[in-house]
Structures are given as structure tokens and as C-alpha cells.
Length: 216
Image (tube, rainbow, N blue to C red):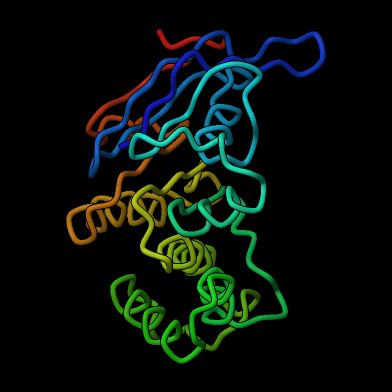
């Protein structure tokens, strides 16, 4: 359902990605590992259409996504790709449920209907009692589960995560890793996760190692 072909990317004179070929199947959990600076996050941003490659294609469900204009690409991204980052990026002035429903509202869905979907996700994620709490009133694990709910609110086929457990203690990190596999079984999404956590990497269906801008 996701295919990257010949991805190259440079920043100034530094060539970060040097020809990446990668395919992800529907419902697969894939871990991307490698040393800092190897190009993992850059690749993830390109797979998620947040950044453009200098060369190469990204196909999602057989569509070359970068042939779309910027507005159409932003809409496609919001509908089809969920993102979870190391830093939760929750808006501090909004409650958990208000943070979660924003992507749905951007698609033009009715607030009442999006809130119903959000509460179902909160129930699945075990944070129903935190729906009306602001991020400052929640633990790190609860904030990260809220970020996961936000990534899932539009029912994307693909969820991309960049060090999602990097700021969590070992107990919460383990819980998040288990949750990802539970969500895969329940909802059928594909997960591509950049991580330094080798415990999670060994749990994944497949582990891809990037070294010096190439898959090894």
C-alpha cells in the first residue's frame, strides 16, 4: 500500500538519502532503525508527504502522491496518513478531545460526529476519563495516547511515528508498543515507526536498518 522508489534527499551539500527503495504492506508494522543522522526521520517525512524528495517517487495505493498540487496533497495527507511524534504536539489551550477532533473538522465533518468517533478511540485507548482534560493535566503516557487518537481520527490507512516512545518511561513505552499492535489487529492500519527502542524493533513484523542514507 506504500512504495518508495529511488528516494534521494540533500540539505545543502549534505546528501542525507542516497536512493531508498521501500515497500510497506497493508496491516504491517515496520520499525526503521539506525544511528542518529542516518536519515530515518527525513525518510519518514517524505513518506508522509511532509517533505519532497529531490529524486524518486512515493506511491500510496498505487498513486504517485507528489503529482498532486499542494492543497490537494494536504487534503490527501489529512485523509490518509496519521502522524505521531516524540513530542506530542498537543495544543495546550485545548482539551484532549478538542485536540483530537481538529483533523476531522479540517475535513469538514460535523463536530458532533467527530466527537463520537473520538470518544470511541478514547475508550479503545483507555483514556475516556481524560477527554476533557488539558495536556498539562495529563501524564506523559496519557498525552501520547491522545496524540495516537488524533492520528487515528480520520481512519487513515497509514500511521507514521517518529520516536513515539522516546519521551516515555519504560512502563509507558511498553504499553504504547503493545497498543500499536492491538490497534493494528483492531483497525488494520499499517504502522511505520522510526525508533531507537530495540525492544519494540524486535516486536515489529519487519525491521529496516538505515545507514548513511541507504537501507542495509
